[in-house]
Image: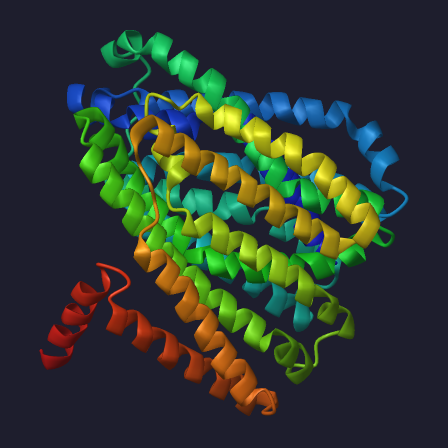
Amino acid sequence: EYGLYNGLIAIATMMMSFASLAMPAYIYKFYPYYKAHLPAKKSDMLTISLVAGLVGFLLVSLAAYLMRGLVIRKYSENSQELIDNYNLIYPLAFGLVMYTILEAYTWQLRRSVLTNFLKEVLWRLFTTGLIILYMYGVIKDFNLFIRLFSFSFIFIAVVLLVYLITTGKLHFHFRISKVTRRFSKSIVRLLTFVYGGSVIFTVSQVFDSLLIASVVRDGMGNLGVYSVAQNMAAVIQAPQRGIVAASIPHLAEAWREKNMQRIQAIYQRSSINQLLFAGGLYCLLILNFTDAVETFKLKGAYLDAYYVVLFLGLCKVVDMGTGVNSQIIGTSTWWRFEMVSGVILLVLMLPLSYIFTKQWGIIGTGAAQLVSISVYNVVRIVFLWKKFRLFPFTIHTIQAILVAGACYAACYFGLREIHGLAGLFIRSIAFIICYATAAIYLKLSPDIQPVLQSVKRRIRG
């Protein structure tokens, strides 16, 4: 059941990437120009984006319907549950397409906190509510549960739409504006290249789940175990959405002003801040994973996810620690490289994932992800350095890695004999105190001191 839940999300995510027609990238790149040259009520950007997303969804839905026979042949042996619930991909994908476009537009309005709340909190509360209703028998069976869940993205998309309407931020203009006409060739070029790159990147992100469901025996069961590791690794990545959302408008504006110093500052600060978050969360996860499964009496099969967590968690640390390189490239005049790097990722990841998964099961899938994402980010770092002399790392990067490793070792070897809730609590608190103290003392991030000063003022006030 858990594998089915994640399998449906993987397919819907892939459909969203095809159906959105790169509209988020169009919004990120050209919103500053629409804002500078048009009043809000005369801007046709959101109208173009939503109409394109709707048309894209209809085309992708038709393709999914026509490919149903192929899906049945590939998945019926190991993942019959996916075939039985195939139609649920349509509402999931539609909600995801609409939300993704509205989210990109809302980011440009500097309302990233709201969109992150909807995606990271409200969506999970919606799902948790369904789980509670299922546990207590209000939702009678799992089939009804998974059908209701398929409308979860539509739910948060509607909430965001209502917010934009009630705050007067939503404007539909059905005439082609002077900005659209002026930049039409640039927009088409952007969409052509970025679309291919975004599709390739999304396929690389969900290919692991689809591969497990297809080639591993008991596909849905193993995907359920793998998905636990995926979701735990996703916890590591949670701060990234906020940092990315906050950086995109500033990067787009800095490129327009050709302010390379500002871009470099954003690049390095995003790198160290994300590395500190990711490194700390990763260490907490691997410190407590096995004890948590045993303490909360989860199924023993979930212990098999430990090594997957090691690989996928480290994959997130690498991705976050390299800063907002994707957003810098995507908002620059060299956005075509988005597709080039995506092709490199896909060419490496697809065969590597297939070979490793056939050889070592879900652990091999996690290892393939780590190797592929690491190479992908190295390629982007080299590109930004060669082209713009932009580089994400400083001496604090090395210090942050050493601090995380030292704090982990101290807590693991010093407290590994304590188990149960007491062990989880004591290890976590000890690591947080050790890690935070070192980060503050060494001033690893330029943002630490302002935050501390703000907290002190609030306490005194």
